[in-house]
Picture 1 (cartoon, rainbow, N blue to C red):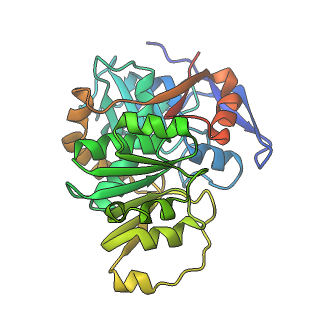
Picture 2 (cartoon, rainbow, N blue to C red):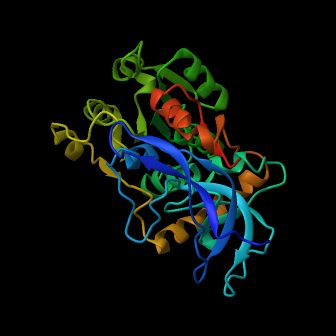
Amino acid sequence: MKVPEIMKKIEIINQGENYSLSTTNTQTPKLGKGEVLLKVFSSGLNRADIFQAEGKYPPPLGASDILGLEVSGEVIKKSSDVHTLEIGDKVCALLSGGGYAEYVTANPELCFHIPDHIDTLYAAALPEALFTVWFNIFQLGNLKENETILIHGGSSGIGTMGIQIAKLFKNKIIVTAGTDEKCKACIDFGADDAINYNKNDFLSYLQSNSSKTRVDVILDMVGGDYVEKNLKLLKYNGRLIFIAFINGSRVSLDLLKVMTKKLIITGSTLRSQSIEKKIEIAQSIRKNLWPLVKSGNIKPIVDSTYPFCRAMNAHDKMKSGEHIGKILLINK
């Protein structure tokens, strides 16, 4: 396939709180050593895209300044040292940037062949969620079979993926979400209990039933006043994992509970991990999760799709918090 010199991309206009997005033209990326060039089918939205557009999350050194951390696409070109992928392969890929465009380069070790039963557009909903859930919950959080996990933001792309995987690994799953509709969706995805945080304080709700307060692992993307409540809910040797701070990262805490209950507080950002670490996570996903994707036991949960020309509408949808699952941009 002949690769055009110029491609379409989505550009940030007036980066900051009042940013907008517009489609424009730019140079098609050049293929580097150990890379493949993908013709993008669709791109997954992530909160990191919004933070970058607001000027709060600059791309790491050497990464594209184009938004987009995950795509699905077709391999149309590869460097001579790539032997795991072939021209024409349909894959989804984790990126450090560049996904909001017609073409993007990717590391082949971070690409996964799309199973036949998964829509090639919907496959873009898989990489970021799989990597985030596996690395944070199962590697950092060391969630074990039959333990209880509390996932805040259960209806998000990360949350819906976390529910599916934890269920397959025989864990008890509690989630928080903002509406009764979202709570019902989380139950349908496999959660054992779902708390509407606009109706119930999750700490009081769980403490009112002593059988529900033994929480081993908490995945938190909220922060703020949730942090102290999380510490109260965790059992002895519990693990609290942060992946975002929607309500703020600065809190005042009495750390005595951390000591007396031997709690572990940790967290991560995926984008800033080294390529070696990402490849290590990818290898573990291929072994432990991708067979479950291929068998249909793990599915991409997609809320809605938008064409590139409506990227700002897609961002507005994410900022509204009304979505259940992932929002995708379609290259058309």
